[in-house]
Image 1 (tube, rainbow, N blue to C red):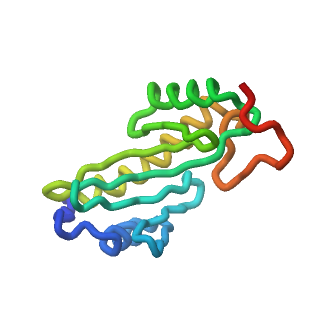
Image 2 (cartoon, rainbow, N blue to C red):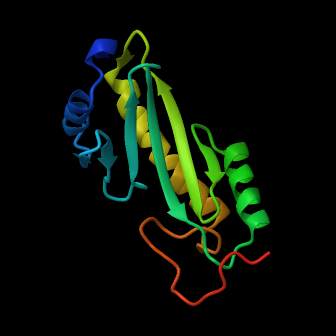
Length: 153
């Protein structure tokens, strides 16, 4: 049986409770976001946009400094082409990954939890398939050492 989370009940506190029920590690940030950091998952934030009835799953990591702008854009395009539930973009030094989940008229608990799992899993699969040696993008939380060439063309 599916459990419905009514649109009016979508809040950081209630979504946090759903994550706890599913035994998914996370924390509530002061800015009203949920930071999900479960084990081997690619960590991400969940933002609620009540006015538009959407949840935004978002994360980022740094590109290797030795990669060119063209390599970064091609990497984003490959992710967008091959992996569902992911939108990849770049803002010079970072790879940004997003997914939007509608909750207008409510959503099931199962859809929310499954979306969290699939979002992170697809990022891990994209990185493993397209950049297994981290030559393009760094693992979450890592930075290139100082002194290397920044953004060669």
